[in-house]
Image (cartoon, rainbow, N blue to C red; front, side, top):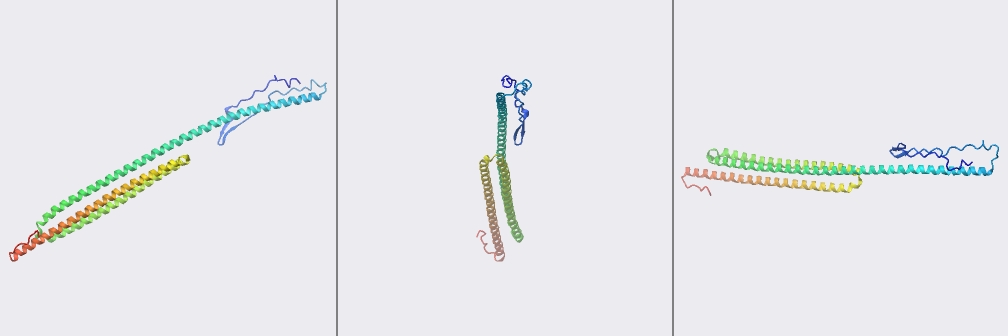
Amino acid sequence: MSNLSNPSTPRTPLRTLQADDMKRTPGGLSLDIVLTPALRPAPRSACKSTTSSPITSADITEKLSNAGSRREEVLQMRKENIDQKLAMVQGKKDEIINEKATKTKEELEAKQKATEANKSLIIQKTKDEVKAHLAKVEQKVKDLEVLTEAEKIAKKFALDADIMKVDEKRNEQLEKRMKEIQEHVDYVKTVSATQEMKKKSYLASLEQSLEKASKRKEEAVAKVVESAKEEEVKVEEARLRREKEGKAIQDKAKALLDEKSGKVEENQASKEEVFKTKVEERNRRADLVRQNKLKLEQDGGDLVPESA
């Protein structure tokens, strides 16, 4: 009887929590908790030593008390073991959560930086393309002006040479001049139509490029928004700024092209009017020369002043 309640009775050592006992699953960590075996060896049966003595109520009470003490000790040891394992699981869980949060934050920051870099590159590329195209348009306008001036000078020399032979080939030269004037008018119309078509094509291409760039930006922004909702306001502001800048560039390019086209049309109309005026003046002088010659042949009268 005394052996059952002796505190010096050896106990089975507690088994500590091992790393192999924890398994990571999609829902978190799972543990295989195995309770330790009995803390004390089973008590020896006292029947052999007390077969000759009867069991009294005091013995029964003592056995029940000892059994209750052992049960409470077992429950306390189990509770301590479970608390230790739960604390270790909670620590591991907190570590995994912190690691995942840090990794997610780094990925979001990397995506945000990549988006900003791509946005800057696309905007700069669009600006460079617009500048290059505007430079080409200005060069073509200058070439057209030089070509028109050269044609004007050539026609002036040809007209001066033809006036010296007005008596011989007056009708032929007039028809030729009128044909050249008509060809020049047709050429001016063709150039104007070509410039208009190029302007429309350029504006359409520019709008399409800006639309594609806007779509690519919106797709990138949508991906970032899916990863981090907190970046939605910043992305929206960036998109608005990008659309405003694109619209400003488009309006500027359109205004510049309209201004250049207007100047070209005005110059062509002015040059055409001057050319027609000179042709009419040459024809009038030719008529005066012819009338003077007829008068000289008929009655030898005074010549009509050529400058009249």
